[in-house]
Length: 461
Image 1 (cartoon, helix red, strand yellow):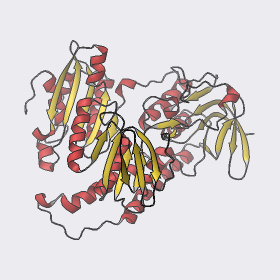
Image 2 (spheres, one colour):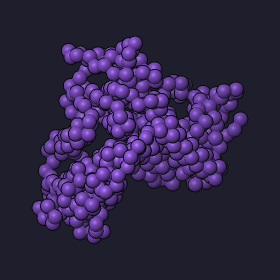
Image 3 (tube, helix red, strand yellow):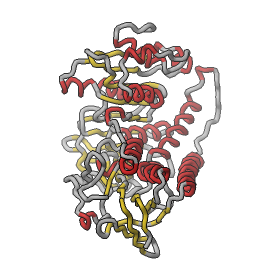
Image 4 (cartoon, helix red, strand yellow):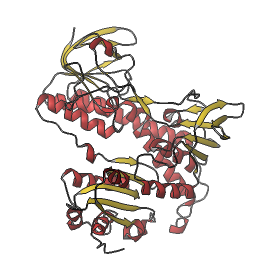
């Protein structure tokens, strides 16, 4: 019976990173993953393939009608969807193979199959042909999450799809209906709109991007509407019916919407089914999230959990940070995650990025703050590149000037937010950011100018 210092269940971003860090610390590590390709949902059917399609669809849209005013004329631009999907899969396979190589480099033992507990420190791995029993001093649950649905909707990954199905349509839908105006719904809706689909987004709330800074969300909706997305807000979807011609989305108190494909993007649920947590008396919430303490330990001594399965922001990089922090707390005595400095990015065009508190959250807390804002249209690099939509907004404490939140909608926002997250991690003030020299001409100057604007002294606006 193989014994390991640590068994990690799940090889997604949190799990494989935790396994590598533990191996770096000299531990005998095993990782159990039921899918042949390592990397989890993020790599196989989430973050990575969606970004490949976002980039490819963006290039296609630019080539078809985005370059004429820049003096670049093209004719007979054609969409080869099969080639685009093949490129997406090549990226996935390459990165998955890279993780496999890292496991070999760090001598991490990999088990292919479904893991379940058989009491404390005992894990059963059921493969396609056999079953194996493992033991370990510590076990880390990093099983991630799966797509959630709504009552009255049966996802078949054909006409009614999750984000997984939306990554692999064999043809561009004539009319794609997206249920849910969060990150994933907007990203996938954007992909297929660029490729020629009519896209209608239905959202239960009266706004898009729930939880994001309201001013940014309002600006995003204005930009996306101009691009061709149609929004219907305040819609309670009652069900989806597959018809001879496509799909019919039924909405309480409103006319139904007809389309040929429906993407259901209403959140995610933790993957705990089949783990046999009852055998080790691990506690979970009513929604199925595993309960952990400040060291990521569950109610069962020696069993830990990280990532989507414990709730909070369901982000790959949050899971990675938790995986490293958990392992380092176990084997070095110290590990840390600053949940106030975890960025979130929506990879639309323009990108939307956020870190820290929104204005609404600060108002709800009753915390006094100052705001600095700077538009991309006043930035030289943005003008030169033709990407002038959006702005940077920095929120700082009214007394101490410490940065409390940064919200960006604009070109390369996902890259620009890294500076802001670093600044917040080190407790920087808006003055600190403003005093740092930023290269010219760069989009990063928008961050500097927004920091200057907190004190009412932006130079270029």
